[in-house]
Image (cartoon, rainbow, N blue to C red):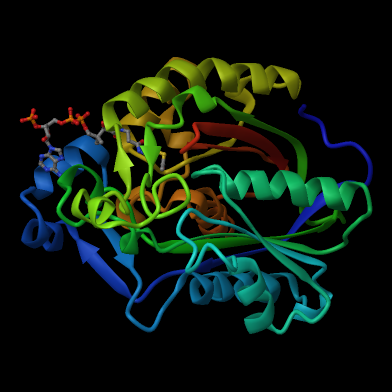
Length: 332
Ligand code: ACO
């Protein structure tokens, strides 16, 4: 799949939700045996955010969602559906989406979660875009929201320094002149590699027990080296094929909004694509890996600070637990 047929789909507004606690690499040095130099050199991350006790996945999602509505000049009652891409829901049952619907006062909207690893924001864009193109819905709020800080193992230095909390949001609506337009989107999964990033314990496969608690299996586990190899092998040819299915070359893309996992991954992928890294929107130095929120937060910042200008082509692309991946083309 690639081209979105039917009613044209526009991005009417963008929003961001930033938690109140900022943690630098120096703060990480006080928690685990690590150094600022190691973190910067291996990942490019200098700081990340974490929610305070009175914040939650839903409160971040609401902040980002209301910001996107303000940006669009829309009201909560205009919404038909709220989709929250997340890997760190406040509770698995119920999901974050219905809480966000209630807290926003979106009286005519449905609410649901999308669990697709870090690609959850992109999966949401595809479903929302399909619903608008086929005229099921008019206004869909797609949110990526994460409070991964509460699911990280703060004794595991190989994961806890990499992730951060945050939320990003897009309001998708029928396209009108002046809006960014979502023209093509493609989603994939390679479930053979589903053990590379996981939270193995605490749910149906391994119900909570003394053993799962002892072995810290309720926390994020990641085989970083294998993820690194998977992405470098799979993603560059995938993106080349995606571009050609959209009728463009990688060099014709003005901005790449790539999942903010690690600067070395971005550098490797851009080298293979023969695209200068200056065309990448980057926020991982300040936010770390915000999982399903990362590309939505990047789009908000790049639109708000004027980097994205009218008449440009933007690729949004992500990968994550599953392993899921995908890409979208946007014309501004
Ligand atoms: N500080 C200091 N040393 C550390 C730290 C740390 N925070 N973490 C690990 N190390 C040590 C390891 O113990 C190891 O030591 P050893 O050689 O004595 O055993 C050494 O550093 C090297 O470890 P590696 O895992 O080989 O380090 P690598 O260079 O591969 O970098 C990293 C690790 C940053 C995780 C890298 O593999 C990576 O970025 N992988 C991709 C991760 C990713 O993209 N995750 C997101 C996926 S999708 C999603 O967003 C959910």
